[in-house]
Length: 395
Image 1: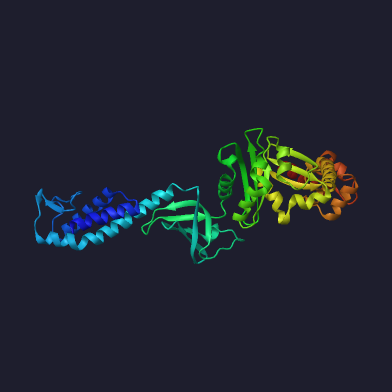
Image 2: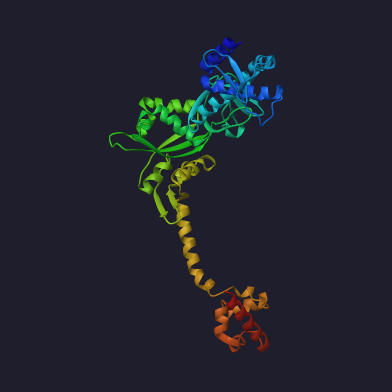
């Protein structure tokens, strides 16, 4: 039993990458619990079990006196294997947890093992399983059992049944890591990814910037004959990717982000991070994109709200603004006469025809001025003045 036990521990240490000392301590701890129960040793009594690291011999001590009873030998023989298996499994779980905890934020490859209620269970290098939840799957991607799959490690949770590894195929950092793999200049830090906006399975925009003037950031990402970007697109099963050159000049950055549309003019509201983008009529659909996708992705990429307009609509908006400006002085003087309490539609119409546009005009004219209007007597004039004063106070 002694030699066999040591052989098992050494084999498991080699195969599972678990330190032998961890296994030995696990066996000793488990045998203490088993012996205490079987030999009815009280909690307050000292009990320790030692496993000789060289011979594999197991010895137990109660209050520093060695236990030599046959019962302990039988306990050791009957429970050691079960305890070893249990503890080894726990130790393996800890090893897996530690290993994948260090992979959070990285890419891992595996194979599709099975499907469970819309989730994909991924075999990760034969060491453990990861779960790709339905919410983290691209709606346009399809996988089959046994197919290779590259995923982004979002989270690793420690649970009683073992570490739960949560994977993703839609996380923006998946795209970033793929570029780091395919583009040496990004991995080496020569080219920097500034921003990513993504609609998984459909289209993404990624802005890049070069620290070296001799290195073209966009060209480096595209690669010779487009081979680098093609590899990434293939990995994402056809997702379109726009590579945008980052620019400190926000107008130039917006123009690049809205590509392939051609921009005519940009008006900035820097305080509110808003921009009105003017394009020719034939560029409007390109700028907005299908279902607003292009402008939506561009807006997320640069972090500004973009309002796309054609030259025609922009001109119309200017005229509307001028008209509103003309109306504002009248509106600023108070509410319309129709809104005054006790003033009917007929009376309001008569006042307007007489040149009274708002409450300020009524208050300036006074009761005598109102009485000059057809249909308004002294009593009615005073009532209108009273309501005008109330309206003035509420402004």
